[in-house]
Figure 1 (cartoon, rainbow, N blue to C red):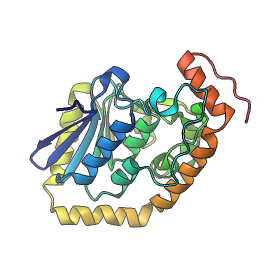
Figure 2 (figure 1 turned 60 degrees about the vertical axis):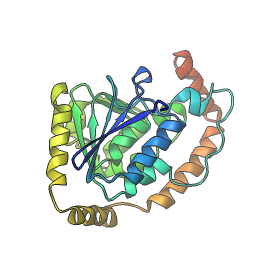
Figure 3 (figure 1 turned 90 degrees about the horizontal axis):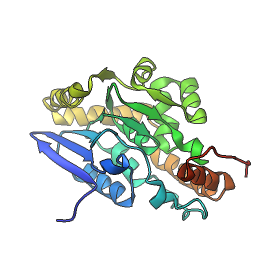
Length: 255
């Protein structure tokens, strides 16, 4: 059997999804996105819990695979909602993020796409896209402001600042912070409580929240992918990637 990037375990009505690339802090490559999308779309669980293997939740995109060396622009993305984002944002299955360490870039997007967030004391959160000359995915633009308000969302998006778990709890980004050894037990206990409720009512409540609070994710996804296509072609994006790979301060030029 081919080794997979994402582990999936079932306990009763609970599905546990574990990003399983701990040697690269669970960075997401194309295969990881595909496996995550397929698991969310095909699950028969009543509740999903998402976490990361090792010391990190998710460090975002695997820069070397998805963004290259910084010398050439990546291929222009198709004008669509990211399939993994679509699967997570449009599922009727409740999703709980058990954030066991740094959740940055698309890792923070993944946490935002969950319905509930439980964080360990070692969790960190950062929308680092601006540091790569890019904009965030749809959750950073829409759901972050729902949780923390427009001003704090703007601060996190525009600065790329990384915040700790305690501050994330204070501003409403996460629901609760627990000791490391209590993280999965707490997330699974919440999952079991939800799974014990009538599944049709739970699904209806999720649809109701989407109808009342969410934007048109498909349309927003098209805007994000089109904007990313433009930003991928900029010198500032290439410099953001090069400086990250070379571990130095970037020098942006505004083009």
